Length: 343
Image (cartoon, rainbow, N blue to C red; front, side):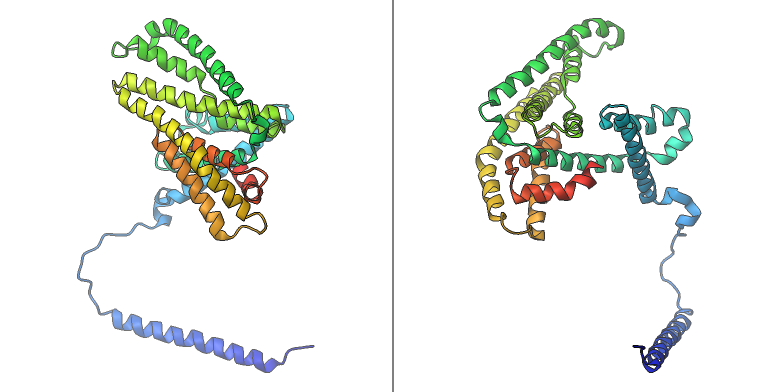
């Protein structure tokens, strides 16, 4: 069945009339405005085509993200073929794109790809990605596998801190005369070395467990729990070291006490609310309002831990842990975030 040519003719005539009318109107406005004079003196506008990419930080940022994602995936796949954790390849990709390799071998290319104006923006995107990723990791953690073994997680975590902590202090005996300045006391130097060697890279460990397929096993759950305790302890120790170095122990006490209060409030007050929220959303797909509410809660929890001197991703991880892992909320967010946040 063919359409009649008459409606097509009418449409063409109407469209032509519309364009002609707009053209006449613009010509009349231009003719009227040509005789006007501006009251204020202005400055010459530099267009992006004249100034190049330097005038568009967004273009630099997009180029940097492209390079990071592409090289990270490439080296991650290569390390997977070599039976190594892909996250190690992604870390090496960051080293290759940074001042250690690209900036040293091709300084102009490094400055163009990651100028000083773009690096903070890229860092903020990276931190947000880590926050959302650790929230996902927390959603996958089944607390039932740790029932009755919480004391073991704390003991194992602190044992894993004490050994490198003591070895770092011993290493300071050899490094201090060679690298320290007279303004730095030995105690501050030794504490810094001890904490630097005893901190676990929590997100990297989570990625390794996930890529290995053991994140949801009892062993993986225990490893994540130990790393979480390790991370909080290490950041509290770092606050103590900073307090000793700057003679401001009050800030360190605030960080340690604040971390304890925050964790207790999350367990005693926030967790029942999250369990009730997950139960109410158990029979229907999450509405946009519910999704926004969870995102706000994640970012608020991350903000609290960052303000306390503990890294923001711990707050996001803890909130994810407190949401029942088998609930619709956990499954929906895990499915929606997995691919984008993982990459």
